[in-house]
Length: 526
Image (cartoon, rainbow, N blue to C red):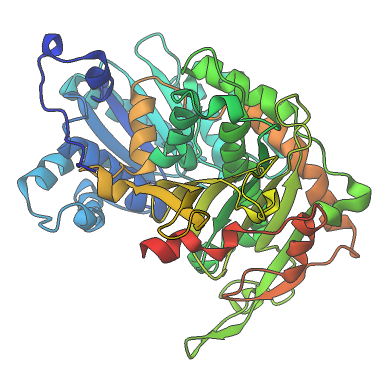
């Protein structure tokens, strides 16, 4: 297939509607204030995403970035740190584009609990707004520990920094959005006490991935799929988010969270929502989030009295891989030796509505598994009648549609096809495309997509507060049962394996197996 070419015609009258939709909009002037600007997330994702937008000419002319943190930095030392972070984008960190971008970056040191910091920020914003003509539009990005979200937002309000008498004021809040239902509801209450809904941007970076958004295009822009996207034709769905790495340098956070909080309550449920939601009236924030809410309300609660039939947890143990010893979870740095935190979860979810009645959704996520991938696999039912004797319907392979989110972004459809040879010589044929082979440009980083949407005042790919409440209502009883019932096992699995064998019982009880964990997509495209 010929590579797609970027649109270069800037004359609006000379391009089609489809071409115009393929061109990014440039946002209004604004200043971005990053709390936690000296931290890993800011330097690994957030600031490089702004730089990527800068070199693509997507940032507004009136733009500046003010970093805030507890680390003692000057403007100059903050910029030196940014320089190192930008080497991924520009090997020549002394290049003109890097130097120009750094001239928009500033820093303010302070204690998040001290009103002095917010007064300093207020004074600097007044100066920068005039200098950069930002029209008093401000985005406050909270890349800080979640236990101080509410304190920072409250202090912003007390300082008059989020009132919208002049300019737009938005607050971007990283996950986790609470650690159970009670804390999530408290956070939402605190946010709503000082902010309006249109000011709150709850971020889940999975929604910024091009391949995740492609689920909606695939479903609702192609007539061949929507008529069969239901219980009459789909047998089951698997959603996998497997990681080959261990806990790494996230030990402090992860041991308090675990996979259920870290992956299922947010990322996995967002993927499930896009696959299973009803068609919205239009592709906008209000209608999209309404349909997600309806879908989440339709999910069956886990039966606590027979929890193991529906959800299984595990923790990786040590193993030897390629002659190297891999530590088990409790041997990792900063992890207590008696930790009961789960590093693996497999679950079955049922949806009580007409479209999906009786169709199981199998979800799995874990660390130190035998491969790294995130994908959604839709398994269609076998044909009802075979006209190819002696082959019976179950002798023919089912059609499988796979959305590969990472690392090999693309889509694959497995079908039965005639092979060269006798009349009934047939077998599987995988029709697939990879983004890297089709499109001239790699998909933008998920953070870049979401940050640009925030500047454009578009909440379509951000989470609404009632979605947070509904997902915590689903998983909080499970977390409480795990904590309070010592009889519920935490199964061990070797690092580099497919996870605990006990997880196989979840689909096996439905006479199915985990098929997605075979990593066939990676084997074909490595």
